[in-house]
Image (cartoon, rainbow, N blue to C red; front, side):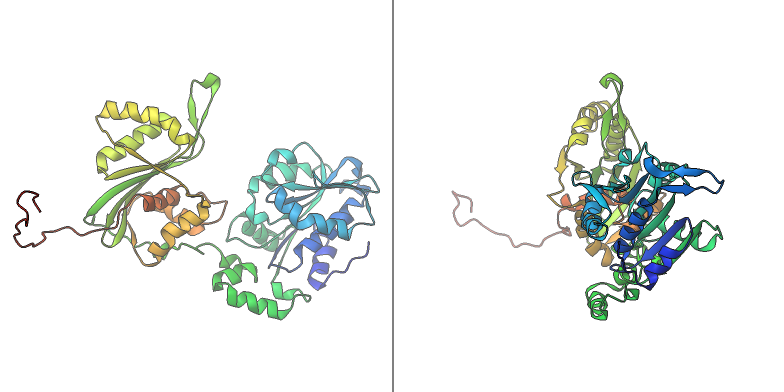
Length: 425
């Protein structure tokens, strides 16, 4: 197998650390280095552990793990077939698996399907775009699978704020643990990438996005859409009309269908629409079962007397409606539900379009409360798939409920008389 590595790739490849963590900008050459590493590791037939025991690697797998199987197949599959064609005996397109001439296998896997990763021993794994995976995939599944063979791992990717990828990279950089080592490379450090491409990216991207994507900065992510400074506090309730929007997390049946249990957190946004924008009075949130969720909604309506109540359409709404009807009777609090929809939009787009423009102009104010802390965590972490978005999603749904604010008051009109006394006008 003939390969050519540039200086940065070669430095990582030749290092003897068991676990390597590489933060690198787009088009630095992460995928190529991953492909080369996978073939080299899969070409080994035996390994001598630190305790002197020789391990036959025939039954140990080599994995390339991407955030999803589809991503992994698209990114690496063509490259694997090209780089290692001399070593490949069989190709299985549907499963993304290569069998080499020595009988060992390289498999593409998706971190979104954790069950597909269980039950095998591993001698090596590449974790690509680890920032966009749940850290449990490494800690609870991959790491234990490497134990028997004392297998190694290569973590590669572009940062997405200071999440678990950052903490792992920082540990590898500063801990002094001899098994771990970290590197940081900018896109421009790929000698095969024209400088003109970097300049185009700099002009096309925001400064924050360029810092993250091309310079692999952990400081360049988080708050790319919404920042803490966009949401001022307003202690006094303004004059306006109140609305409530509910984002339901969903429910599932348990034993014999007798119970309905919660899956995730629900959020109830209480907002006053006024001439200065939206005043967020409260966002009630928690992990409740379906009965408790219905009670929370009815209590919010009873306390705040909204002009309209909106709840996201879907199976969760269908599950909660019978309980809402019971709670309305019990508490003598009656209201109609306006069904909210995603409008064929991605959740990320719907939230961004509903909130970013208003927030950027200071037209979303908050009342101080304990709910501010999770709200800011979600807002500043958006749109990371690893950060919950229940509170900001409920707030975004207010956009479907509110009517344009009209300031009321006395209107001076002159006395008038109908031109036609019979018709009355």
